[in-house]
Image (cartoon, rainbow, N blue to C red):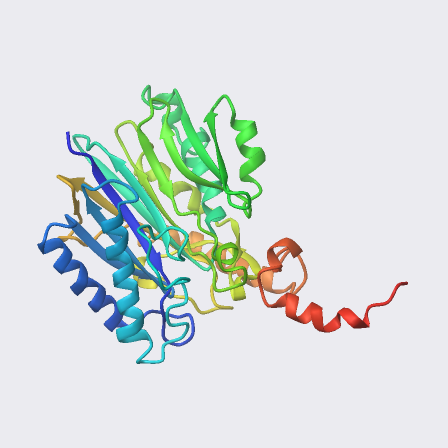
Length: 370
């Protein structure tokens, strides 16, 4: 049977009013390019979204993960948005996430964030695509642990026979570029030992115990690729739901209590991850706070099926999430009362890739032994 692939590829290639939002012409051009690709059968369906200053492409196709044609198409979209819209309009940070001029067959490691999941479609196959702004891939660690390993969050781990065998987490060490697989519940403590270090260890994939793909996350760290601060990574995440996987409500539940994530202003601060509707996916206070949207679709015969054509279910638009947004606002204001003192500001290892080293170098000659 043909296997469907969902690819979510995002990049910051320019925005208006600083980091606020991409220009509408960019979104329109992306749709035009992808419509042509759909007509010739390169992709089955697509959706273009924005969150903060990032543009994301949700693509479905039958070509598998890491396919050169799909990655080349995405690269073409971001390059044309940069050259035809962002640069002529002098948008802020035009082409920021495109760290190379030479496409070599795979967009991974070139700046844009990538999450891909290939699977055989079930009788009914709901998915949720999360997209965050002003944070890094480690922001998914806590929610993914709760979704797939915490019975206090996911009741199905206790009462659904299909979930009781647990899940396998693929964890990437982004510093040394190596990975390990850990099985829950047996290795839950070992898994937590890694996931708590969010700046180094990031969940890249989750599988059900029988090997069925359950989730995929982007794990690129822009600062590690470029060797300097060029903006936060703004990760994306795909999660399959229902019928042998956690329910939609269990997948969303971890975001009800906003947890602190690294990023925010100048990529240098800890702040609460605020769940917002797709229409509210813009930043303001201290260039934030960090925020996340949740888009729901059905996958049917290799295509995205939304609530109105291709439009996804806006899963954080429910008034319930006003409560969580209020908590996030309070936490954001509280964190800012600390100014540039840790833990409001990131620890020194994270600050190495910001502009702080330039300040320290200026002061270096003035230090003397005590």
